[in-house]
Image 1 (cartoon, rainbow, N blue to C red):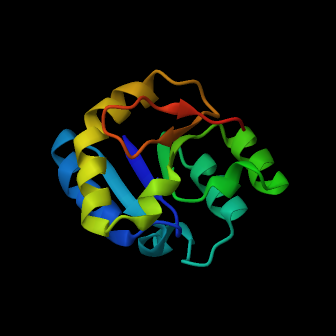
Image 2 (cartoon, rainbow, N blue to C red):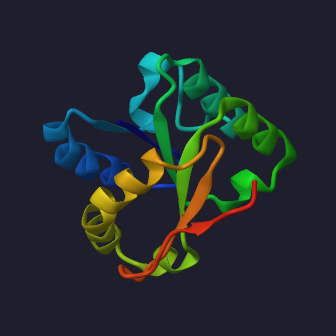
Length: 140
């Protein structure tokens, strides 16, 4: 499984998750480290969505802090065309230090991975701050 972190997240999160899932043959990358994909830190959401979709297999899981990705008309249309799956951090994460966000991400990753594998394409879920809470489906 490949995980993509957009520019609304810290590159540290991608590095931490990558270190964890590498032993399971997964990888996590932050947009800032994807110049080989033609992406830059300031790439528009539509651009990275379409680029991930063109990758074969298109098995990327997106993690973002940007709840607006589903509200912007162009981003929404691109997401639906791409059939990506992903998680949006709940707003409570914005006030947390990076090490606590990373801790929650690692803590929840096995559950997130199992959950998202069975999710339908074009799905987006909120990752709650509370570790025992379920994933809330978000309307696309």
